[in-house]
Structure formats: C-alpha cells, structure tokens
Amino acid sequence: MSATATAPVVTCQSSTCPNGHPPSRLECPTCNKLGIKGSFFCGQECFKSNCESLCACKTHKIIHDLAAPRLDDPNINKDGTFNPFGTFKFTGSVKPKYPLSPKREVPAHIQRPDYADDGIPTSENRRAGQPGRILSPAEQEKMRTVCRLAREVLDIAAAHVKPGVTTDAIDEVVHAAILERNAYPSPLNYRGFPKSVCLSVNEVICHGIPDQRKLQEGDIVNIDVTLYYDGFHGDLNETYPVGKIDDESKRLLKATRQSLDAAIALCKPGALIRDLGKVIEPIARAAGCAVVRQYTGHGINDLFHCAPNVPHYAKNRAIGTMKAGMCFTIEPMVNVGHNWDVVHWPDDWTATTVDGKRSAQFEDTLLITETGVEVLTAGARRADLYDD
Image (tube, rainbow, N blue to C red):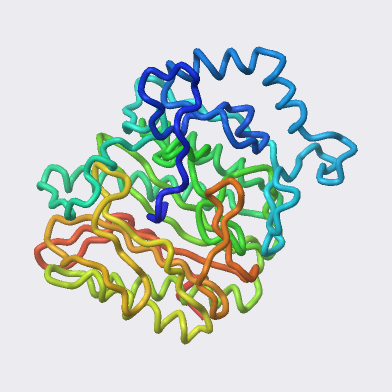
C-alpha cells in the first residue's frame, strides 16, 4: 500500500461521545456498503451505543432503504450488483460493482496492529515526523520472515488471476492465505480500508477496493499484499496480465518493473533517497509514460508507513540518506502517456489516471545492509517482464 496524504477524517458522530469527538473511521457497515457518507464513531463503545441502536430504529433504516439499490434503477445490473456512485464521472471503463462482501473475520489468536479495531494507526501518528528507524539484527530477521510470507501470499494470489474471476474472490484467497500463516492482513481496516488486499485494474493506479467486478481478457491488475506478523509488516506488489494484453500494456509493465530494478541497484549505505527518482523517471519517459507523484514508497517496520518518504520522480526534495539497518519500500506507479495526476473515486481510496489510460506498479521491501541492499520480497524472474 502506497504512502500518501491522509484521506479526510471526520470526527466521532456520537451525540454522547465521552472522548471529545476525536477523528474517527469506525463506520456503520451498512452505510459503508451503500456508499452513504456518515455514521462514523471513534471506538467500539460509541459504535455499539449509537450506530447499532440507530440501525435498529426506523429513521436510520429509512436512510438505508433510500440508498439501497432498486431493481428498476438503470445503475443496477441484472446480477444484482450496482454502481454506488452513479453520478460520478469515471475517467475510464472500470467502475465499482457493489455490494461489497462483509468484512472478513480474523481469529482472536492472531496478533493485530493497533488500528485493527478502530482504524486509527495510533503508533504511526505518534511517531510521525521522526527519522527512519535503524533495526536491530533481531528486528531485521523478523522483517525477513514477514516479507517471505508476504511473497508467498502474493504468488498464491497471482495464480488466481484469469478472466472471469472477481477481485473480491482474490481478496478472499489472500485473506485465507494470510490467516494460514498466522498473520494479519495489514490493509484490513487501516484508516478504514474495508478489505485485506488492494486490487487495482487498468486505469486504477492504486488502492482499488476488491468488489464484484470480474477480470476480463486483456486487463492488467495490480495485487498489493501486506502482512503483519510477529509485530512487523512486509509489503510488496506486482502487476499481472489477464490473459493476452496489448503491446502498449506490455511496454508499460516492463518499463515499470525495469524502473524499480534500476532504483534498487542504487541502494546502499550513504545513497540519497531523492536520487531514486533520477533513474526511475527516465525509464518511464523513454517508454512514453509518466511517473505518479502523489503516492510514494515509505519506511516500513513495526509501522505500516513511516519515514523515509520515497518519491519516484526526478528533482524531488526527499530528505534522507540510506543507512544499514533501514527498511523501506520502492513502488513506482507509472501511467501510459504524459499525465501523472490522479482522480479519486468517492470511496476516498481508489485512485485512477485522469485520462483513463492504464497504470502499472511494482513494489519491493528493501533492507539496507552494510555492503548494499537485500530485497526482502524478491520473487522468481517473470518471463513476461524480462524476456522478449
């Protein structure tokens, strides 16, 4: 999951909030499914005392009924799926297909990050602005373990990419594979994100929410997996072809992967974070593409997102020098054409290209060593990216 400016946060809407109405992301699940903005609470106490009672009363049920899809609505598909943002002007052909499946459960014995219940990453917020942390040898070993598990899960998910499979079905596969490893899916309820993995199709740059849309022949899909295990996060993603893709999409995928590899080759103690964009952007431009600026790579350890901030474009002003024991991600997002800007859907997560052209992304978690860099999430060489 990429780092970016925090999505808008509303205050607790409980009329009897005992905590002073702090920023809140615990939301009425029915409202969330129907795309209704509101019904946010700061914690389980406010949620149970207000949202559950509201949902049981006639007034709140009327709101649900008004927002719920009608069979005679032109936005309703024959299979009962619907677009909850009917008046929104999408930039491309990809549109959401609701309803979202219910939130997937995580067994109580699995260790959880601090945001698992209320959506608020308290530890991240507390350490915001601090420099990148140097991990001890024991912590580095924990990062190796969680990143190995994350790679295993991504490879399992990738095996399910084919025409006719819904992105929600892949979310289910990812969720189950993570639980099998006694790990927690890091995206689940992170700042309110409703699913266990980000799945971004075609013009979706990042943070796509898995739903009922079926993958189609010729699509490209990015799968962004992050695990939380033994107190640490491991993060990686890749973009995959769905069946046969056109030549433009092939060039996009290859250029994006090559730009990541070129950036990784620069990593070593003493290297400047800001210099990574100097090698990424020329590769993208040579392929007729643009590098997204709003989203960046990020530090990762016991926190999902932290320092350093890792931009992927040239002439950035990122602060920081690589040091042995530091972990961070590099994850360039590259768009076909010359436009690097983004448009967000009303769900406040899904980011798309402004012109509907395709976008690809690849990500690895890296550990700076005394002599260079270790790619903690390294996988097998993909013929579709390296071989002509």
